[in-house]
Image (cartoon, rainbow, N blue to C red; front, side, top):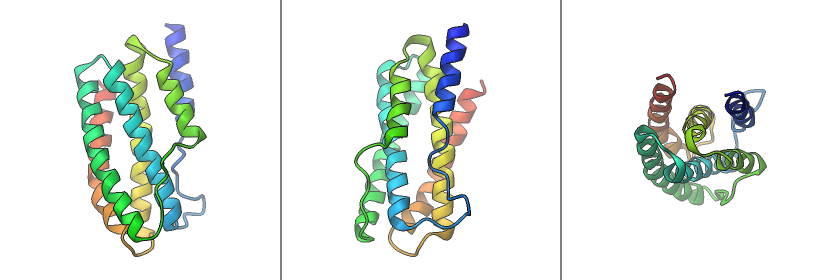
Length: 167
């Protein structure tokens, strides 16, 4: 049990927010929003693929499938909007994202599901903050509409995963 608690604590620490708005509350530029949003989306999709392989609980597996479908759709919309605004989405994770995935990959069995769900709470909180900031303060352009329209879906995801972690 002590090992499981230590593992979960390490994962929680590893999942520190990396999508936060600048400390001064300044609006993000389109390229920075696109970079952060693409890494968020990519992390959630890669984590969902892992959950599909390693998850044990029915709710976890269903949530992972929902993440894959919804994030594929959102990623496509955001990528098209970014292209219209002349910015590119990142096609790979940064070091922090890779470390988060590595922490999940290191787990299996009963330890995986709670760690995956915890990672999704953090990821969705961060994504929600990022979308809210850009929808409210970002530059006018093609990226603004999908930031606004994606917000309710991400909020629903957050509420769903929070509900699963509180059971």
